[in-house]
Length: 93
Image (tube, rainbow, N blue to C red; front, side, top):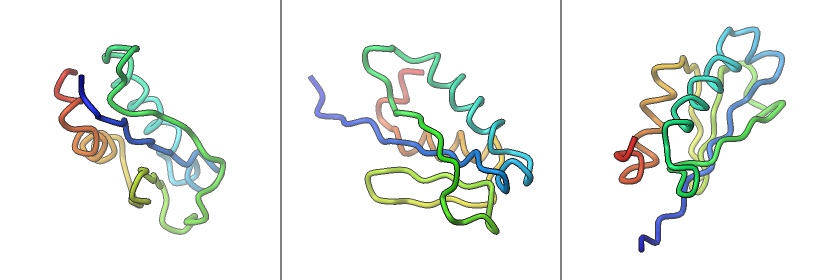
């Protein structure tokens, strides 16, 4: 049994991140990635936030633990970051 604790991925879907064009699309891409995983052992937990207080740098995402902040994202970049953060468990996808 692994001691792996899945990282929490928070995607901003606030007005400015949406205006930048990707907040909801990033969330949907990560949601689809999560749907491919074992629901009893998800490689990451996915949540949204209405604002991460980094509006000028959006679209934004934060990964906990570690409070790692990522800005100016698109779907491909967000997926690559989450895959790396969730390793080794994401290798099951």
